[in-house]
Structure formats: structure tokens, C-alpha cells
Length: 473
Ligand SMILES: Nc1nc2c(ncn2[C@@H]2O[C@H](COP(=O)(O)OP(=O)(O)OP(=O)(O)O)[C@@H](O)[C@H]2O)c(=O)[nH]1
Ligand SMILES: [Mg+2]
Image (cartoon, rainbow, N blue to C red):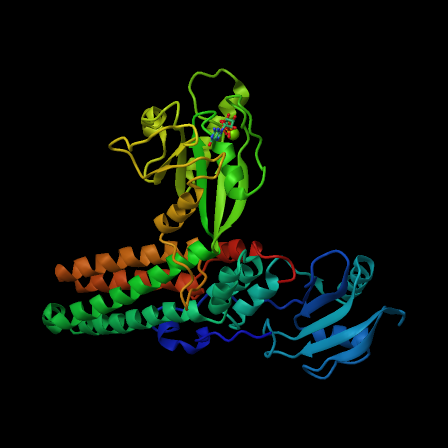
């Protein structure tokens, strides 16, 4: 399987060389092996070997290096030439392989004993066990794919819906990277323009005051906004949102979780203070993953240490939420006094939806003034729950999959946010006629953009990204 990036990093001399410097990473020289199929029993088990020792391993194991890219039925033998298994061998010589190195794929029988014996033999021949994501990391280091594409592979494997899978496939094939590179190229052109002006100081002032530069900046900004929109949508599709269900004890939080999850995930009782632990459920909202988190009811009049710890955890979850559903018992508290009392203790900046529950018991309802978005429903009967689902989708800006939805991650949005801030500062400095500083801000913006596709990346970042992949990927 090969993935062609829209641009190879090595082929971007302006981005890489004179203006930006070269990346610090060098491809590794040792040989790795791992099972590419999940552990356990199955019809076929695939082991993958990558690195310079691959031809040597193939010769020792199969008697000869197989013809490139042609399946060969072979005996996999041990050091005494006794067969370990019989299967298909596929050889992909560098650089035409997934990792860009010499790769051998062995499709044997999918039993744990036979797979482990084969793996032990390959270790004996000089390979070492691969770390999680190490094949993808090598593909990245060898310019076979960029960082956003490598992440899209993991997102494809983890996709929780058809829509997310299709979006990940598009990003894996480079569609998201291409958008980012479009902005990078426009920024590079801008920087060349600005830096040329700085080299001719007598003309700098004139140059900065012409409308030309302002017009170019505006154009880049429009493209940047396009990428941000696309990434935001992609992030919703790929990673979804985290919604915390909070409120007073007995408001019906766990009942609501169960209703949305479609089964009895949480214990529900008429006893106030039933839920103590944090409970997580992942559901699919027309393609968007929704991570629902049920929490202990908030109240001040308890001395129960377990409940107090539950509340502490509830508040910690709210800090990390994309949205809080604050559930009110609509019968006992029709004016949402529980929310009014708690408002000051909720994390600032995290949007809240008020859910007035138990409408099946209430005779009428009106929205009390000065409150956030409000919905009335019955978690017990399901009445109004569809409207809550729709509200969650629209309030997050999620649209049903358009023709070209892409997968993206919070990491990308974070980088794009920094690009935007640097860029806006550059525009401000232009107004102040500060050519050198404009150039510097644009350089920073370009660096932040480069983090998305991995033209700029620290070892820590790579470790965090690839470390979350599965072994053998
Ligand atoms: N009539 C009616 N009863 C409900 C509704 N939702 C929940 N209840 C009842 O309210 C009681 C409390 O429900 P829970 O879901 O356990 O409430 P909770 O907010 O999770 O409570 P704690 O875990 O104690 O914080 C139970 O007896 C539920 O059956 C509803 O929509 N209508
Ligand atoms: Mg509960």
C-alpha cells in the first residue's frame, strides 16, 4: 500500500532551504518487525519487517529474496531449516514500499503460537520489535507521507462511522495536506515579497504603503479561513465532541445518558446521589462521534466523602468539555434555580445547554429570562430527545457530510489558531509600517502551518502522535 503526498517535503526548496532551514530528523537504520494483524486467532496473520536487514532475513527465512512485489508461496524456516509455517511472502524493495525501506510481508496462519514462533525467528535474525506506530513514523521520516496523512491512517482505522472513514481516506490521500500547502505557498510568496523589500530599505516605506501587500494579505487570510472551516468540520467528524452531563442529584442525568446511549449504561434510582464515578459512553450522532460523560450530582449539603470526590471529578470533567448539558428537574425547579446557584462555579468559556427534564410530569413550561440555550424533554419517555440531538449537532457547527469532508484533529486546529494570531499581528504591523516585524510574524505563521504536515516537528510531538498508533501500523 503506497500513499503519495501531494508534495514531497524534499521537493519544497523554498520552504525548506534558504528561508526555513532543514528538519532535524534522520531516518533510522535498524530493522523492525511486528504483527500487522490483531492478536488472537484468525485465518491469516501478517508479520511485517522493515529496514536494511530485510534481504538478509528473507534469505535466511525463505531461502532467497522473493521477486519484488510478487506473492510467493514459501516455507518459513527456523535456524535448523525446519518449517515454522507455510505462507505467502511479499517483498517490497526500497524506496517503493510503505515505509520507504526494504519491506517483507509474511502472510502465515493466524494462530498466536505460530505467529510468535515466526516473530522470534525474525528477532533472532537481527530485527527488533517495532514500537507502536513505528512503520508509519518511518514512512513519514522517509517522505512517503506527511504527518497529517499519517494521522489520517490512524483515524481511518479508528473511524466510528462511514462518514468519518470516508473523510479519513480523503485526508490520507493528501486532500487536507494540499489545502494546508496552498496556504503555505501563498505565505511563502508573501514572505519573499516582504523580505525583498527589506533588502532595499530606501524603497521599503513605499512598498509597505502600496495596496498590493494589503491585498495579498487579505487573499492569504481568506484561504486560511477556508482551511480552518474545513479542519473544524474534520475534527468534529474525526474526534467528535465531549459533552458532560451535570446538574443536581436526581435531575435525571443518568437517565438521559441511558436514553442517548440506547441502553442501560448507568444505574438509575430515586436515591439522590446514585452516580459517583464518572461514566463515559461514545455514541454516533449521524456520523459525528459524541463522547457523553455522566457525572455525580452537584450539591453543597453532603458530608459523604464518596459523593464529594464524585463532585470533584464532575467539575474536572467540565473543565475539559466542549459543552455542558446542565440537567434541571423541570417539575421541582421550573425556573432553573439550580443552574442560577451553580452558574458561578461552572468553568468559564464552556458553552452550557439547559435541559429541563421530566416534561412528562410537567403541565407547562416557559423559558426563564437570561438563561442559556434551553430545551425541554423527558429522558424517561424520550420525548424531545431528538431535538436535543439536533441541537448538539447544530450548536457545534456540524453539517451532514458534504462532498469533500476531510478528517482533522484538535492538534491541527490548535496550529491553525496560532497561524491566525501570527498572521493578524503581521497585518497590524503592516499598518504601523514595521517591515522587519511583518516578515518575522509571517515566518512564525509559516512555522506553525508546517507543524500540521510535519515540515516542522519536535521529537516530543512525533512521539506523542505515533505513540498513540497501534503496534504494526
Ligand atoms: N417522570 C420522570 N422521571 C424521571 C425522568 N428522568 C429521570 N427520572 C427519574 O428521576 C430519578 C433520578 O434519575 P437519575 O437518572 O438517577 O438522576 P441523576 O441525575 O443521575 O441522579 P444522581 O446520579 O443521583 O445525581 C429516577 O427515579 C428516574 O426514574 C423523566 O424524564 N421523567
Ligand atoms: Mg446519576
